Length: 304
Image: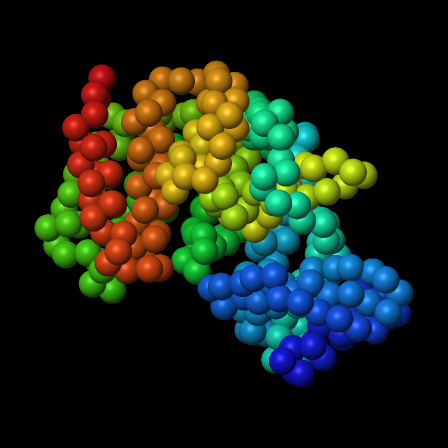
């Protein structure tokens, strides 16, 4: 821990904060990252996200995503990125601390506002294509984002197909199980549109990345830890529904604000398949049954 704290202190100084770190507390982490709340000698509170020095590009990708969300017209807060510093064994990203609140402090009205604001991203995109200006990661898994004019091809090659190749390559899925996924991939154009309205996606919207916080006495919800790219707005809603945890009022507000509802349920299952496969790749056999069951439900869904 001493080496890590020295790297954090160096990052604080390099950012121009002429202050000492006088207290620290772990906030979480995982997938090779450590997240630490720090207090400085002048009363400043910050978040330090730390990875091994050779993994610094993961922090740069996250910073890129946070800035993209901050620059959009979406009325949802994200933490400001102060700096990224490589010092010794570690790369450290300093972030604004949004003082956390408990989920039970968030009102139903605030959740509805959050859901509607997420859906508004469906009418905003800096480009008519799908993908992103750089690759990033979804959890511990690389997420390739090459630009593509066809949403079906993008999902076939860089989402479901990419995850399937990883799962089969590491033996997480048998050949028979892989064949079920391949049947979905072969018929993707029957389940999802080729050119949905492009939207800026958070990309990794599980409940842990919706951050209730207190500002000026009000409880709001911020977005953290994005895996951004341009895609179908329903992809964000699909992940919110996959592992549950979001209040139904939030999901309903999001769903009701989406204008393009063609094959909405089936589309969401396809997008959920990507995340289910990613959980197979990260966590292993515990998610295989869920993933294959989801693929079979897609194959049984109406195609016309």
